[in-house]
Image (cartoon, rainbow, N blue to C red; front, side, top):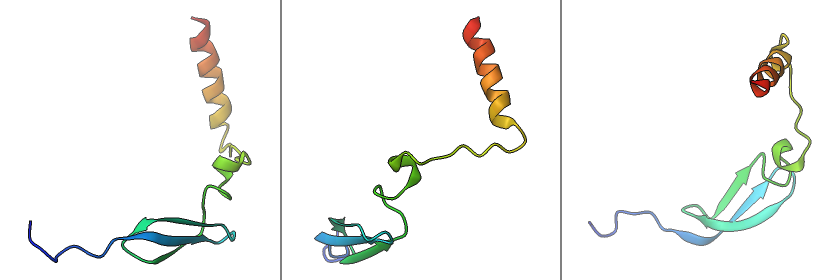
Length: 70
């Protein structure tokens, strides 16, 4: 490997979310800003909703119930 071609790695990089949550991680940048984190993302907070476009979710559930009976 060639020397001095890799960026500096900061083990104490601070990540700041739009919700105000902050945590420390490793990165090649000292400060990172993100819009969504595990503290505010709907999947992790349990607030996720299923958006049914044209009855696709209901059709899937019917097919799944049919195949479970077999």
